[in-house]
Length: 555
Image 1 (cartoon, rainbow, N blue to C red):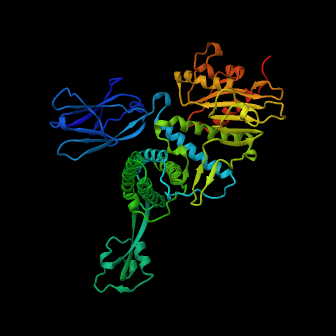
Image 2 (image 1 turned 180 degrees about the horizontal axis):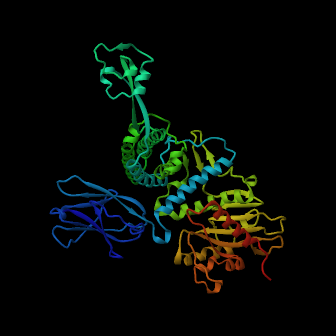
Image 3 (image 1 turned 90 degrees about the vertical axis):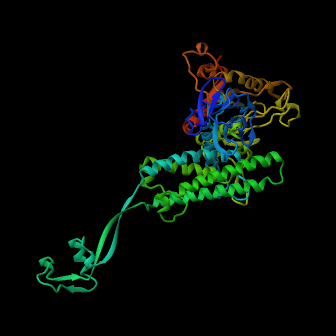
């Protein structure tokens, strides 16, 4: 038997990837790791080739004649890679391998959660803005971005599992079908059916003797008898809506593939190769969704708009409820939301985390200070085609009570800034800044630096230098000519979940950074912002930061 194994060089773990791939725990295959592919049991192993995303891997010396071996270094790549095994005289075998970010950056599920919440926050904040238009669905004339396609691909993997569970036990309904039969064929007609049939049609009289009819009929019988049958039908409104959604998604993916190919025709070879790779992936995903739309519950149902109505079936049946949640995710993924952040692959999760923190905090600010003071006119750019672009660079959003949240605000040297506030060394760009304007020109105001770091555990120790730098280097020149610092507090934003002890001095790093006494006493430390946190949890984190930074200093 010919089979392909994958081996981790760091842990020695081995699992089969083809055929019949074995399930792998998320995080087993990580970026920056080193892995071996081993082909066993093939007489043509010496002439075999293995390709990752259409690039051949360099073969290593094999331990046996029927064995081939390749080394794969993912580098800073995380996501799904296409693997192709070529054996002489045989059709190429295609399969996929999922690589996760380094464990210090959590897992692929967190990437999906962050992207879902970024898109969800975009819609929520967009609805609070001065724009009064819906965000269009569909591909339009702009190629979809990488992050959206990564997100959709993971949703389709889950979609197949949901459809499989629905097919095992689909919802049905009983319907009554009425058939008109000649009396001599209606041998199974019931008494009520015969009596109802007397109301219409001809009545015939029995000629033979003795009568074979029941005495109450007195020898009369309807010429045609209406017989009712009860049928189990899959034609539910929910199945009609689900089938329409599946067909709509399949068509969207096919259109996205065409846009990707057309959009990069005049670009360099690298961009064309990447676009062609994603176009092929979109076509494969579209075919997978199209096969799902051909399943019995959807093929036997009628037509409906591609929109789900929250009925009792979607509320109460677990499998249908999961499909409803996936429908919401798919709507986020195919919506016409654009922005440079969406062109980030999974390997650059840290940049997505920075934007996620900002949008989460803006939405939390609206809930904490009230939407009346929220001004997000500079956050969105609407286009004539119905899309919306999220302006994700150097954006300032007032959130109420005099507070503003700034994303990637640049601080140049203070002596060239009109307000004489900036850096005394070089241009600095904190990820997020929470600022409150001073009441008078002589007052410094409040400025809280929030540096987003998509790291956990010991990786946080290496990130401390950035907030130390911001705290020391951002200054202002007072009217008297005196140079004084303007940073009230500086905190790391991280998905790390700390373990705290009674006092901060007894708490080891990096947990010490999260201790309430340490954070409030030094106005320095870290706050947990983790993908999947509730809006209330994010708002509470924002309140803690503001409270720590604005509390009177201890004497």
